[in-house]
Image (cartoon, rainbow, N blue to C red; front, top):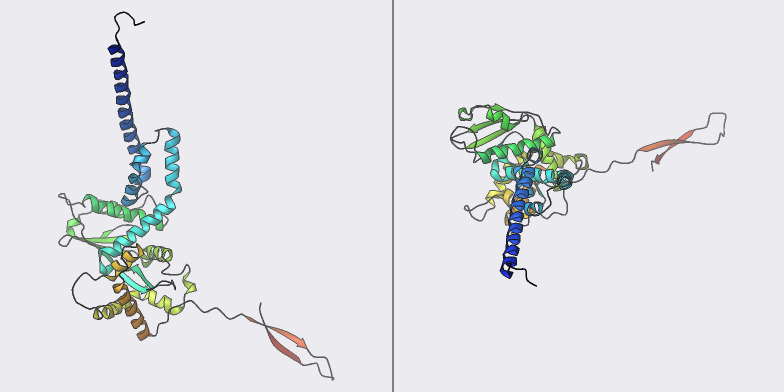
Amino acid sequence: MQAKGVGSDFRAEAGNVRAAANEDFKVRYDNLKKRAWGQILRSSLLNDRLSNQARRKVEASAESIYAMEFSVANIHGFLAGVIQSLPSIYEEMIVDLFDAIIERSSDNVVFYRSWKSNQKHRIGMRIRKSRFIMPRFQLSFGGSLDYESERFLADVDKVWGYLMGEPHGYEGLVAAMKKSDLRSSERIASRYFDVRYYKGVQTLHFYPKSSEVVEKINKFVGKLRQWIPGNMDEANSDFQKQYEGGEALTKEYMVVYETSARNSYGYDRPAIALLRSLKGLDDGETLQLDRMSSAVEAVHNQHGLHCGPALAKAPTAKLICMGEQRTSENSSAQVQLPLLAA
């Protein structure tokens, strides 16, 4: 029996109010949870360790993160997962920075014959040891670097801090440049690099404090991509000679490379072609790499360089004495025979 004074329309309205309230609560809770997870994603724990690009990749999966319950257990689980993934994240950060330096300017690139024997073109690259250049660095109206340029330098600090075993608490590029007048074009010193900014052409020149600084990233990426062996002692002296002398040899490679061009116009950078090939973006077009491989081979033939593995050392010979039976008054003669060590 229907209660007196209460119609069915009242129950419908009450149900609608509850549904609306529940929906409003859900929207508010989801927004609150999203903001809370956003604070975790932008926390110093991640920002101080991850490069700009690596952080963006983590944020790209934000929707699945936002869907999780915002609880202590989930926060700890998320951060533990990031920390556990740090080695692979750092590996990607290092490769991304290496490729960015190679891509920004042809002057940064040194070519050499790579180690991997089953690679079609056997071309390796490294960053020039004495100096490299990064164009398109802009200043803000106040004379400081703009946001994107500063983020790039922060990535350089993080990558080299990791490579040198000093991830935190050192005088990096960002700190050094914030204390300096960039418009003066004076040389600015930081922990691992001196830098000089040329305002007119908006380029930043990096001068490593030692060749070891750049070789850290060169050898990390070189080993990862099998351009160099895990231990340089595995390679013969010619391989090491062409690697160490790559700056001078690259000039010769490029002379041969450029004379082999079918035309003198168009975008022709073998370093970019190699990176595109590594990333599967070349669409099977390898003309530039064919020409560079031929140029390297021609220059090596001119210099008598034959790169390959080090020759195995001959086994050490041990001498044993085999005494002859005494047949006279004189002491028996002893014959020495070589015995190869097993």
